[in-house]
Length: 450
Image 1 (spheres, rainbow, N blue to C red):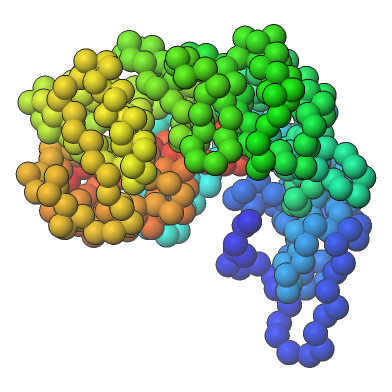
Image 2 (cartoon, rainbow, N blue to C red):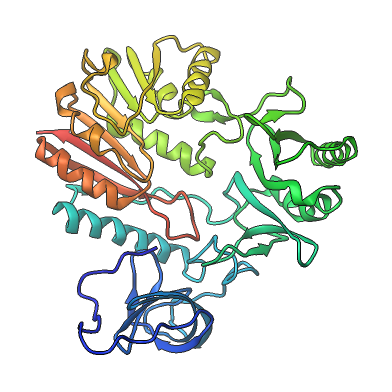
């Protein structure tokens, strides 16, 4: 949810309290500009409206999703006067499904929006601009998503199983028979999944379904009660038809029905195969992921005699390509199971100059034994919360070069303030279009010690 932006025309305090706007109310609005998350901004009777699916300059009818004080969240129901930039939504579920919020914008305009968002955060929060803007890293705008989580819920009142994606602005489930952003191998599974799940004997015990396409296709079912033999047979037949692995998640960790099957993904430019299990973090866009790794290596410019630190290493997505180029890689991750999987990935790829450690990276690094020897360069790829405690200690590690991969420009900008304070310069930055059709921004920044 977008935070209120400074300078918006809120109604002055004092006087009688305005009545709250009910959910579902329709309102005609004039959209003045776009917020950083791609929603249209309108002003009416002292309130600020954030409207999904609207563009600057448009006259639209909006339906209220929620109201908090003088901020109203809404979605576009009708467009009376369209922007010249508007294109027909490529997906039949646009406006209902909560997944792709800016598909009414041409792809080049989506990239421009994300670039503005990153530049605005760096300028407003950190007061800096990179010495060089890198062109966006981008790939196909459709058919890119190799992993998807499908919502499943039993409606006891209607006695109906709901299968699909979450609706915009609510917990409702939108039935999906086709999703243009899924990779092609997952499309037939997505279209036939609801009918198969409805055949199971205990629909009220079903949780979500996770789909993955990598070195193999996998279907994971979360279930809250044991499956009957008949249900298991239905699931196995479905997966056999689609040439997919079946994984089940009851108590404990997800497990494959056939323990001899391998699942993972390749980093083709480096001839690497990484093992993966449902529940692990993995970048959903394989093409942009490979381009991101290549750019990170280019920017970091690792040398053969160097010792490099990879923080928030996951399954080794950056650590393994780095290990092919340097003397030693020390890789750190907070999730113990992923640390073990990353170490196995290094061994299976015959990379023995890597060391993996589990650590809570929301805490300072000062007491970490693996940090005491220092590093020539650091790569970090933190979650949305950023890496404030980590970056506070980076200068003490002796790193001259730092590549920061971010999935949240706001925390990247916050952490940039600290890096500049430590004497680093922002040399280069650019966006990574990991999620086309959404306003989600990933970015990469290169810092060098002064």
